[in-house]
Image: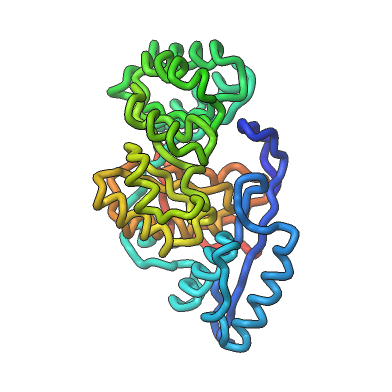
Length: 332
């Protein structure tokens, strides 16, 4: 998938993203899922990826897929899960029949602002606000921190917190020495939340941050392959205010539901975010999220990132993701 223009995160610049489509047929209908990984972030063994896909396809053909362990390949697990859901419902790419897929209700989403120089970020912010977004998600940690503070001041001068919600995503860019000072500086701008302020795997530090941060904290990368503990144990130990669910990185919809069950027990809130999928994966995530009846603004605005995305019934209007059942899907 080719980005409309290279995007910058705290992990570096990306001009394209690789992935695979997985299709399964019963002879009449075909279900399609997307296996979407992010190199440097996903736990998938990329050197072995195509071989695992080939072995999986053979095991499905032999009706032995139940014995196939995909825990080391969460993106393939999500691709297979959604391909089977699609096939079960007639191969129409309607995995969950609901008011969203009928075009009657919409999903509020955040407008994503990518890292870059000040002018580039200003331009993105203005574009998102003019497009009617009430929630802006800004990637921080890749440019000068003072410039990032200036950007936030610019937004707040024009749009107070009761008109535009600001979410930040640090992608682990801060460290033990500077994280609390930076959180204090950022908190002056009425920030809704900040995702993953420090790199994952620092359980005691993250626990301290979640307890003392002036900005509510959302765990993101922290949820990917936590070492030797269950989702419930991880959340109980850290107690964040929010978690971010990305089915492609967490092993699919059913695995995400395990995380949701724990949040409900612990009083933690959640929202879902697409992880640079094409419209195939985005469609599956959006339809699932709608079934969960979440009242949070979701992170599902990535469909317009690519110049070669598949045309679909999905579209964005006034800061919300919508589905037009009268529109057809393009070919893969």
